[in-house]
Length: 369
Image (cartoon, rainbow, N blue to C red; front, side, top):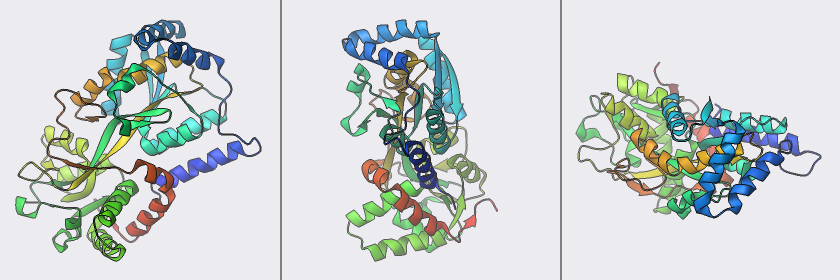
């Protein structure tokens, strides 16, 4: 079974192939225009940077190439809102985070300027940054971002929050999960769905349990029972469709925004218990934005980075997503109990957790069948 970090490992092989014999990180053909544009903007006082970027973006042709793993119903309104603000036409390449990463790496190796800016999951952003594909950003938008959401060459733009979700017609209040451990209970036998690529969720829950007093043997037993209760699905959007239709009763984990958006459309789904407050530790995984070093439209890339961390945060809230900054009116974290998300550990140990999660899922059935 191929999971998310397996794809990251394959991306690493692409990197290794490109660096063999040259002794350096992956880089595309030199783009002096991009370097010079980023330097011009960075050299100015912060209150002058936006105007300079707008001036330079006009000279570039008012065009931006965005690579993102946002779903289409999010990427489209985000692109439209940016276009309305700056008059810059956005060309969107949308795929899952693995596809976005692979395309960006392959184009870089070929010396092709494809993306101007990338917005995707933390692990893929870290790979792009580690291999020298992203440029530094020093704009005033960073002042709104907490230190936990700032990373070398990229910044968290939104958060995907992990929580169980269930169909309220199939799971009554007395049977709602009250902890991650509850997913191992016999009453959920055959009712639970796991997602094939959620090794980062698996890692965070495992580390949380170990840090809060459970032995490795106890943790292993819990996961064995959870897996025995479960079937497997591919894709969080597919999972919520199954849940909304009553084809599954409970999801071990989905992103809260996906559950909330489905509920807003009338689906009988929720991630909050009847009392409105969940005690289940909620892990908020960062998705980030970065400017590509060899961007064909670097000024537009700079503007998008700045906008997504400022006015763009309000657009994310309108779409029921969780912004990485504090935005008035944002209720996406209401009723949740947040726990730290281990970005550094997962970036360093991705392959290990992928193998463990893959082994856990072996033998599980397929959801929807």
